[in-house]
Image (cartoon, one colour):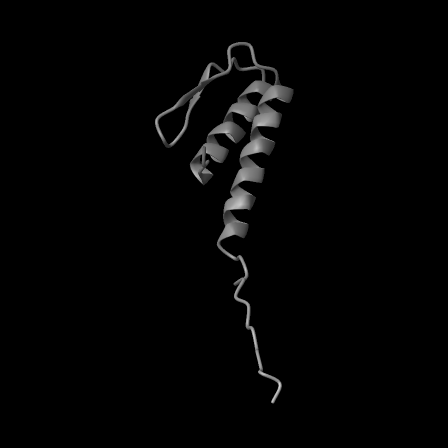
Length: 78
C-alpha cells in the first residue's frame, strides 16, 4: 500500500492526541481505508508513523533511480 503525505499528517495528529491524553479511535487514509486504534498506545502509533515515513522515503527514492543502461562494445579482432 502506498501511503501519502496526508496519511502521515493524520497519524502525526493521532500521535499528538494520544500523547495529550485524548482517546484516538480512528484515522482515515487518503485511499479510503480507516485505521482503527482502539486503545492504541503512543508507541504503537509511533511505529505506524515510522512505517509511513519509510514508505514515503522509498517512493521518493524510486523517482530518482539511476538508469541501468549498459553499453557493449564488440570487435571481430581484425
